[in-house]
Amino acid sequence: MRRGYRIWIFLGLLALAGCGPPATVPEPLFTLTPTHISYAAAEIANPGRGLYRWREQTMICPPEFKSDRDAYNRWTWAALEPAQGAYTWASVRQFIEAAAARGQRAWIGFGTSTGPLKAAPYLPAYMHQPGWGAEFDGEWYPDYNSAAVQARLVALLDAFVAEFGDDERIAGIQMLSYGRYGEGYLPWNAPHDHPMWISDASAAWLVEAWHSRLSDTYQLSVGLGENPVFYHAMARQPLWGWFRNAFGWPEQMQNIDKIMSSDVEVNGVAIGPAVRDRWQFAPVFTEAIGEGGALDYTQQFSAVQTQVISYHISLISNGNFAAPYKEGPWNFWPAGEECPEQPSAWRREDLAAYIAAGKHAGYRYYPLRIGHTEARPGEAFSITTNWYNEGVAPIYEPWQVFFQLRRDDAERSVIWEAQSGVDLRSILPTEPYRPVSVKDTFQLPASLPAATYRLHMLIPALNTYVAPLQLAIEGQQADGSYDLGRIAVRCDTNGEACP
Image (cartoon, rainbow, N blue to C red):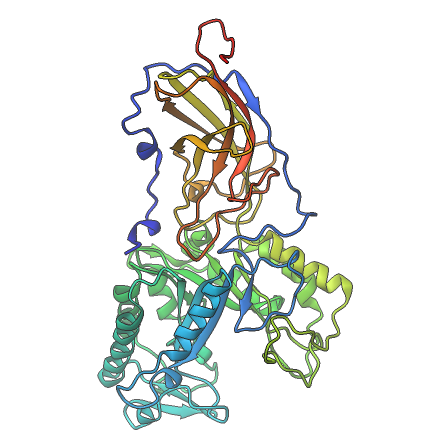
């Protein structure tokens, strides 16, 4: 299982183990300065950040504008369990496989139990019975205080685990089993004796049912809301992320500020600060507002960039856009079209605002100055890297950074490689001219031939379904590494390079 990537484990000890550096190491004598790539350039696509493919929609199409390294979809409980104890995971598996084929990580929401009955049952039909829940305003709400309903949710979660286990193609899971559309909110005007209202004890049970089965394997997130389910999720370790499906709509997103100011405390955890600081440890996931009707949603485009910064958002939906910026009739899923043209009232400035929000979302790393000591075979060699993160959040998985010495020829074969001790997860957004400086010390092999080499940096792929991590610097090579410049490995004491 990938338990370790939830825990902040610094990899410096691994990099230094067995290297045997001397008591003192010389300060850097040489400097390499990569060329920084500005936001004005094409999008630098990486997983876990930027514009993601929302439920097979892709509305902003040009590749230079979209990150497109993540795909999201969700399923109602009824869709996954059409009859009691009979589960169907074919559509989920098809989604995961299609995302992997496109080089995307899959984000999955499932178990949605409440929504308009006129559309389709969200909860399996056999659960629509007295004692298991009740209807309100055309929607059926399950009673999570009921032992019978709890048993069925456990069965659903166990069936998911049995089907997918530790699938590295899945990046994260949204818990959607509570609240309208699974987003954690309930109708304000519902009577308080309605079984939709969950007790504190049942809320703790519900969170634990998901947590105990999935948190060691996947990043979990929960819909933000003023309810005990959200509070208990915020108090669990490993830490849950949170999502808010109202991106671009100021009145809805401002509810985040209210909860960040909350004085609620659960199990010794102050919920307000936990929500405010959670972006440092787990991603903030958003979806465009997607509402219809007569409301004017013009504000969404002027608000998105501010919201990305204010709430440290990592992932933004590339789809589900609200009127009047969508016009019917239209079809999100025409056969054979990856990114179909759709009728739209988008203005150029609207598109630019949303693209800019996508580019700023999540992390954006680059090393701007690499200092190193003189390199000699069999001796200590140190590299000091000034790291910048000009995004709004860190990365949340343990991507490893490697330095390589490669031959300075057409083949560029790797002669030496060592892992840096940097943990990119610890590099939060940095201010200009205030980088995070990381010093690595290695012992060069005595057998290393003295010559002039190219110093490369490589952040290899986490698994076979993603590409090496991209940095905001020039010099990227075909294999995903970055050529930082030349280094001379010398063989004598007067600093002269050997043949």
